[in-house]
Figure 1 (cartoon, rainbow, N blue to C red):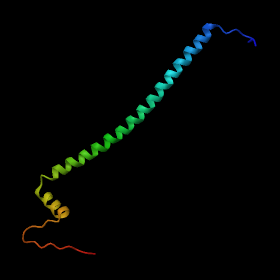
Figure 2 (figure 1 turned 45 degrees about the vertical axis):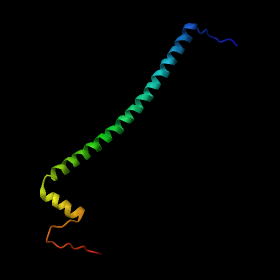
Figure 3 (figure 1 turned 60 degrees about the vertical axis):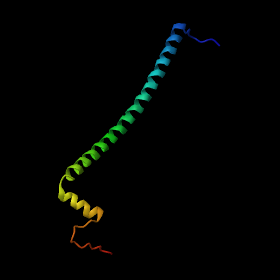
Figure 4 (figure 1 turned 60 degrees about the horizontal axis):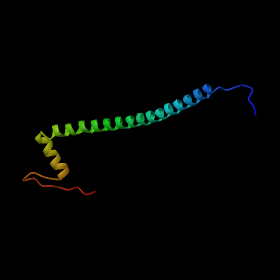
Length: 91
């Protein structure tokens, strides 16, 4: 079967080279998309870690105060001072 037009070898080479570069660019776009998704996920983790760090710094600052340490000892550890009577409320 003969084509009604003639395709030169230069045109075929140009088409093949263009297809190759399009394939390379597409692969780079896929990698770029994956990296952007990973960057967004890591930015979220950094934000969470930063918030947790701020909360922990505040906790450290509060632990320098004796009244806060006493409050934590009473609430979390159930400790009482000498001479005090501890009561436990049962529902």
